Image 1 (cartoon, rainbow, N blue to C red):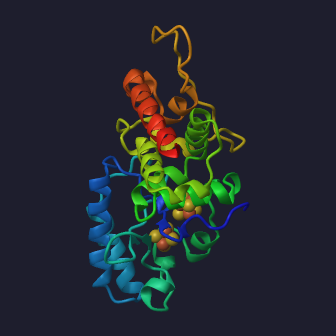
Image 2 (cartoon, rainbow, N blue to C red):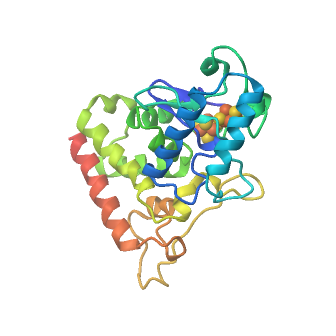
Length: 264
Ligand code: SF4
Ligand code: SF4
């Protein structure tokens, strides 16, 4: 692990590997409704294995079928604070008041505690801080962004290229820039449902490394690759993903320019 834990950082939290986005309706509103319901039910559940198992079964019965049946969805992922700015495990001893009830979920406590997604080995501390500070208080966007390293890097490089200088966490003190960068990252939540770009980090080859994505510009009647090809590949701007290349390209250009302008 080359970077500090990404799951819970100052201001940012993720629940992607607990199955947060493994839903047909992975809209922000749908995901937030689900988290709210689980949090309410588990707050009323006594912290015992029997009660948590029973609550997990009841919650699971009401949840829609997963998008990827082979990936598990755990009903214990919910909100950790009243303002809904942080998500996390409601069966963890820190949430239950001392009892570890993670064995009652879809994995066991050891698996939950030992798992670190590939972003932990790919992201640098600097990159992790940039995404955490940019998506602070917004676990929905943070989880989508922090699990897609190729997208993050392409976005930061795109800004650097346009601005003519590298982007670092020092730039995040600039509120205008932070807002513009957040808007660039938010491309991830505006893609067509089912788009490959939504699950960028989950497209792994046999060796565990990401499978490079590509846009067939010739088939789309375009002579040359877009100047934003790297980002567009990451968000799945191709017919297979159901996204419109030109619309996305315009959005990418506009959002990159806003970032570069904010940097001055
Ligand atoms: S997907 Fe990665 S960052 Fe997110 S909760 Fe799981 S291990 Fe942590
Ligand atoms: S029990 Fe494990 S899988 Fe379930 S929410 Fe907690 S950490 Fe995630």
